[in-house]
Length: 492
Image (cartoon, rainbow, N blue to C red):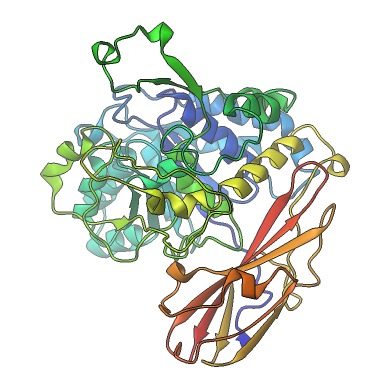
């Protein structure tokens, strides 16, 4: 067994986010969470755009409000971690995108400041790809691509397209279909429904991670109250039952008497959250999985999931994108109800296995956000921070790659890992869907909970890839926090 990338320096993903601010509160919620992870990502664009739900206006001022609030707590955040961007640098890449809907707002003379920011980011002398998280309509990216195609050579266009990765939340205008058809080599991943699994897809579906609190109470206690001005700008999000797409006549009741539900973010956060999930998620290997969910590596037709947008995409068929992937091996530690969700356009019914690739991380990512919100006003001494995993002297938060042989006895030692506060617990398990080996792997019970895990690679695994996950959780003062290391075994 030989590690092939020990002690390589960490890198940060570049990110542009397209978000329909003021459509509903979840985009404002997402913006707060993104700024709380701004030290983990290089933000190249914060662009307010239109969508299926807000088609004629954009609201960049709602991003500016939160960036300015972030500026008021940045000094305190810097006591907890390095790498927080300057406010002026964020404001310089904050703008509005196309002010119209879909491809009707794309073409000559339509270029918005948001589209210019995208072009400038991709053209920057930086070899790293630009990840574009689309939490709304995608026509501002389409405008950028339209301008480049209209003004540059074929080779220059190909180079420009090769530097873009798209992570799309369900499809909220017809521009995604145009891009996928016009630029078939574009890295375009669309999660049609899985993104809704961050805290959905329906009320109280998936693992419940808020303890004895309702989600409303948890948000008030851990985000909005006594957590600084940025936390106060995290709005409560209300849903009603019967749902938004039931008529009053169908409901048989007035709006005032219908049941209210409060809950946290939707799909807009899942498009980018994996980039902050160091040691587990890989933007370059979307089949690996992590906080941002998991995708298949074979493109296929993925119609929009937002209401009636799939009909608008018909003019641009055929087109293909990387689709969401199912996790079938994960066993939840507590029993959860079966979800059958068909609340997006079409007649596809999604079940627990469609959402497991996000649900499985929900508890850890919620605790992580809670602890970071404590950083807004707390000192390093009275708040919690993630444990540091040490494998073979490497404490960087990179995915580790290992060359090994079939039938080899393997031992991985993480005993030198350290806790910020409290004690450490260890959890080892294989992630079969991430790799290519289809045989039986040692169980989580076999791997145990010690800091050292030993096992034998299957004798028939030659030529296959096997993924082992280590979770290390510190008990902490108030919030237990989890760090990850993925070990990818390339077996010969």
